[in-house]
Image (cartoon, rainbow over the protein chains, first blue to last red):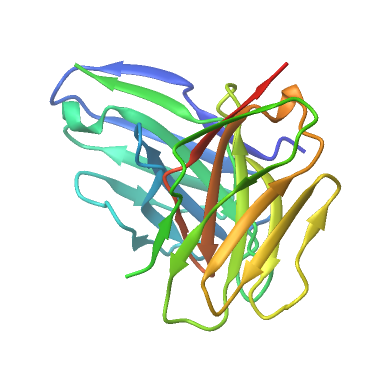
Length: 114
Length: 111
């Protein structure tokens, strides 16, 4: 099993450009999450999904959109990138429900917006 | 709002010593889970240990153990016989459907 994978691993954008980050998991998890990690701030939840076709806002959703068309994939989009979105982005997944709810993380994507 | 506080931004200990990382949290919920994650320089987030809030018994995982005090909303991590490979950022997190993370403690094990 590959676990949670993220594409791409690194990306440099110019202000105003758009891009999509792809997260894929092969563990048949119901829940998927997108976080951003900034120095000194830990991980902050951007958006999450509790199942195929569902999405919900997290702590810092502004400037991002997500889609969960397939259970195994969770896409994070930036329509018009800004320097404030320079960060490391992590995707995670979990079984969800009343369980351990341990989240399994991808390797991260380092995004730089110039 | 749920919050997590890790009051020790950095710590360092000699190899083979014991170290305790502190974590406090605030929530009005009664049923939740608590986690410690490790993030080495590779950036990969790795689960160290988990604790169910409804269990009074503290979780242990080899050299890692927790001291969970639900009334005090405290969840500290003890690392015994520390090893060089324990050098990493450690994040405390809690929640259920969603997790709230602390800002992390950078732990350095000195040879």
